[in-house]
Amino acid sequence: MAETHYKQELYPLSVVIATLGGETLLDTILYLNSGEKIPAEILVCIPEEDSSCAENLSMKNVKIIKTPCRGQVAQRAYGLQRACQPLMLQLDDDIVLRPDDLRLLVQKLGQLGHGHAMAPLFRLLSTGQYVTEYHAGVSGWLHSLYASLICGAPWGIKRMGVISPAGIAFAVDPRYCEPGLFETQWLPGGCVICHREDLVTEDYYPFAGKAFCEDLAHSVLWKKQGTRLWMHLDASGRISSDPMPFNWKTKKAIFRAHEYIVKLIGGNYWQLRLWHVVHIFKEIILIGLRCIMR
Image (cartoon, rainbow, N blue to C red; front, side, top):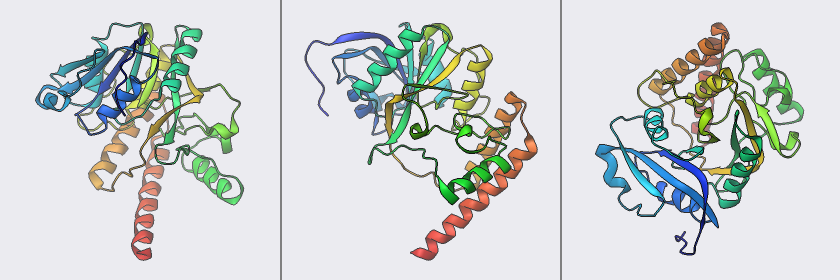
């Protein structure tokens, strides 16, 4: 996608992107800058030792913030402290947010005013299909049984947008919702917009390394400070569908993160342990089936 050159108006919006300078970063920024209105500033927050990876970002509204820290949450927090617009959008460096979707988020949050945060639904970049789909029939019944019995979630589509007592979050399928907004208990952290006054300023992720479930911790603290959370069902963020490879170190980090969520919500540790065991067995079985089918 080529950068546009005509006169563009500015949204009163700071976009904060925590990154290590991946291949998708440039496209993410070009999409943000491809509409008739664009963000007033885009802060690319990158560790100082990796900052050479962002040297090609020479657009007028892009600022390179060299962070003394490393880690998605820490880099993002460093950037948010330096953002100056009344609206704040935290965005991952591999998410495509098209101009119409950005406009919908900015307009609706502006109408709601302070005390609200909002995210789009996610679609697969390759197909346009929603990332989360709830099933009907026997398959739907089995999914509901698993979510309810193992995770402690409400039955059926009532679990949409819920964080269960086991610290497991359930996403939204727009086919079962009225158009517009859907109020939820959590927002996916890859693309969230809020007012400056509603930022969570405390260091809410206590672990080093890759941040798992940081969006759940963020959402819980938002709710505790009285911020209402909304999915905008007419706005979409596009993501790739690269599966996370199985390894025990990652599984341990994911369990630790969910354990922290359970502590924040006063949930059920034994239900989390049950989910963790069943989840690992499911993945091992699926890996085995794939090997057999090759």
